[in-house]
Length: 317
Image (cartoon, rainbow, N blue to C red; front, side, top):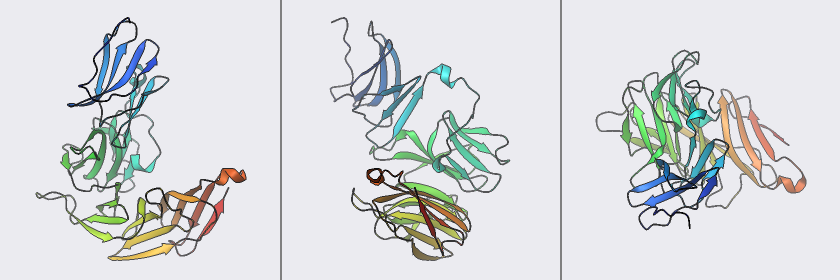
């Protein structure tokens, strides 16, 4: 044996990954979990970074990047300093949860090196939060909420959520708006848990903090929420606990104080819904047939409406 190192405080640790001359693994200790690295030839410590929660698998090394899935349901990524030495606020992800605009000019985008804000439709960007976020929602030119993936709540069951009312100058942590996700619509914040959709009573929150009211409920699980005139629309999946398919997807509209459900045209196969986009009155809903490969098909299913959800066309490949 050339060398040995004690890792953690007696808890079960993750398996190591050797990349080049470095050994990477997750240290799970009573004080918290961290990604640690040692020189493979000598055991000399080389790196340590706190994680949002414990991890029991080997870190994945891909080129100059490292990815670690945590027990809280998050995935954290790391990169060599040389990789991060690029123009700040460079190209970001096109996924909806990483971008949010309150109007045509004012938006947020989560990049690898932080959350950036634009007030001119994306022509220029400025840093408003020093770390990347797993979800952003800009509610107004001066307010919004982010979910931070590098920290977790005390229970270790969700990411930390922060809101601002002064354009990102200061951020306030809140235990409210807990659930699967949140979004901006109709000048306020919306969030969902299971099949229940909530709306902030007042936005931005007052001195007593964020308070919400449940505006819709039912069976299933909400997977995405998008703004529509006078409120928000929620895409509800029938798949709960690993059971059920979305052969006839459900859209739930909460508009102008009322709630209505719209069941989309049924399709065959074992379809799961993923997301949808709204460019009112156009709506596009994305689904995937998980058993289409058995028929040598790609599996993509698209529902489209050009009249606010009144009529639909379905295409699949």
